[in-house]
Image 1: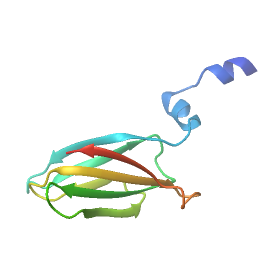
Image 2 (image 1 turned 90 degrees about the vertical axis):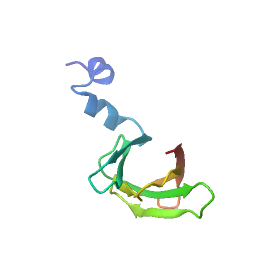
Image 3 (image 1 turned 180 degrees about the vertical axis):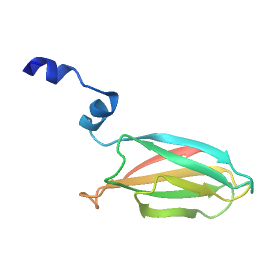
Length: 105
């Protein structure tokens, strides 16, 4: 493969995504398990190197920290809770630079 082909084409979608800047695309779920606890998942273009903090703000209640900064992408929602989920994320090499995304659940 010549130099131009290597710049334009990738051998896989995974390789292409890894060349892009780290990004959080959104959340998947909630998927409810037998005990009615909801399980969600952060969708990002990295498998590691990003820490996530996940907070739920139910309507008319105080915010709940579901997960403090961790590489773990899956999280659990309290039974019968709905509201706004804030996902704060940062790169492990840039701990002071925190980004945020919000979704309603």
